[in-house]
Image 1 (tube, rainbow, N blue to C red):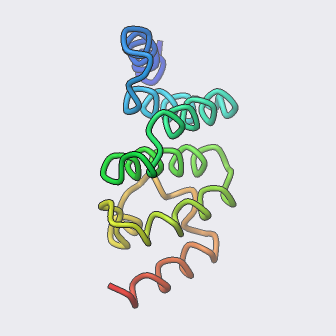
Image 2 (tube, rainbow, N blue to C red; image 1 turned 180 degrees about the vertical axis):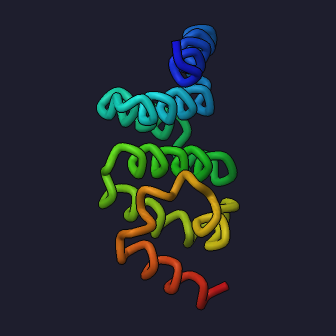
Image 3 (cartoon, rainbow, N blue to C red; image 1 turned 90 degrees about the vertical axis):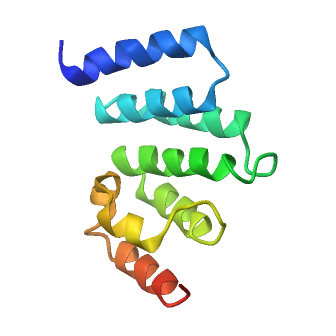
Length: 126
């Protein structure tokens, strides 16, 4: 069993124990994405954002939306990832241009010209 598979088993157990814990769902989604299980990963990420929408929680909601954007990035759904990132850089939630540049979670998007455009768009505003 690889480390990712072991982490997945733990994450699945934690979700079973607390099925409405949005952070646990999002982490499970990220692990599934890393394991190449695209549909399941996106489903977990979407479920987390449905349970904790930004409209109901302006503090933690964007964090969960950010995790869904990471899932999209990891699964090759770049259009969806960029759509969410453009939104997330507009709301006060802790996501910054610097984090986009440094966090390895965004590596799958870095060669896309939209990544540089997004950085340039928001770097000028900060």
